[in-house]
Image (cartoon, rainbow, N blue to C red; front, side):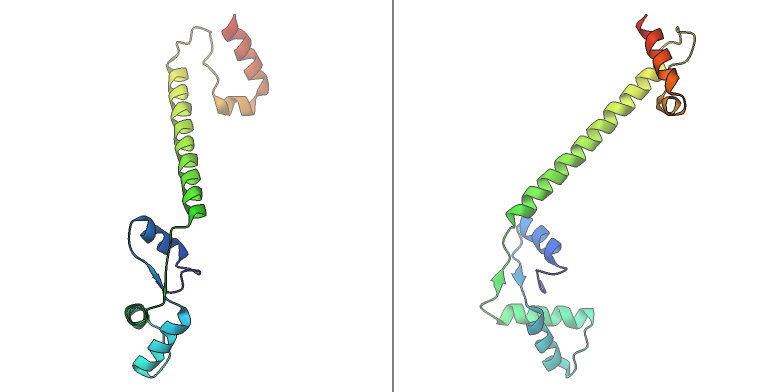
Length: 132
């Protein structure tokens, strides 16, 4: 991985979480290999990938990327938040469907959320009618 502290951080953490071995290759080292390989410093995707691979294979003291505990905790919180959002959506949709299935024995249809926003007095009226 070329410069794990920059753009590749997310990808490096994902790979480590999936059990892959990830080595952090400093940008300066890969740039030097790129210059020596073709005589210029042009950076294309194939040349950059090749230079990063050469540095990773031939350099002994490169840092291995470790799992970042803060990233893991944040990922767990985000996943839990997503689950809560999906659960809320299920409850709202189920409630909406059940309200639509209610018999219209009150003389009017049960007001839905958009009705409440347009006419706040409809909420008080419908609440009094339903309770009685």
